[in-house]
Length: 320
Image 1 (cartoon, rainbow, N blue to C red):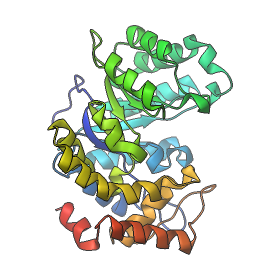
Image 2: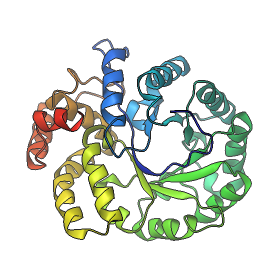
Image 3: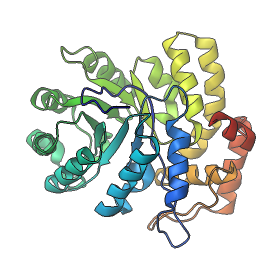
């Protein structure tokens, strides 16, 4: 698939996990297979690498580049690849952006710098400067990752409007505002601007409700396990087929409850263990400070998979 810098992020976009060996080095062969399992499901419009789901916080620049390069080799000729830009400093973020452009990414998912967590919301010029620094390094389409305001890293509504005006390569937001009323305002406002900005929901804990508000897509780590169900749910909502959407959501529900239970930071840890239970990867290892789940929690994941009707046979069949 020839890369186009006119790519507009929309539809169902899974975020991939990072498969690790027992010594916490990257298991490249297994990660490649996992990436293909997620990216090549019919209905998927793009795939994201080097995001939260792949423990980007614990990966070096060189590892991030290698992850992107191998992802491009594995699926880049068949589906657009979105690369995460996770850095506390804008100069570092620009370096990652240029690297992703050089290696063939179709878009960038820009995380908020943790350095802005202690009041950056009061200085919209900081967010604008961060994005402008990235936009100066590449003309790739950008996705603004919007966190909940309570984290200290969310962008206020008016700040995002300024961002869209001053950085025209922003094409979408990954919306994790975690506020249904504000989320609907984002959808109704941003998607109808003179230069529309797509809202990609990442409210995977209440995905059906979010999609029913009219989001033009979703970008979700849960797609590493249930991208088939996400495609089916998105399609049913777009077709205004409420009965089908409710039936699919009944299957998603037990896994959403299991994946996004406290502590929230273990969500991708749980997804790795689910892939082990489904026979898609052999082992689930995470880099510290993340830690191995207890057997009791793994048992709860097994129960949730059963309640969702997801078996080893279903998992492999769905990836065929």
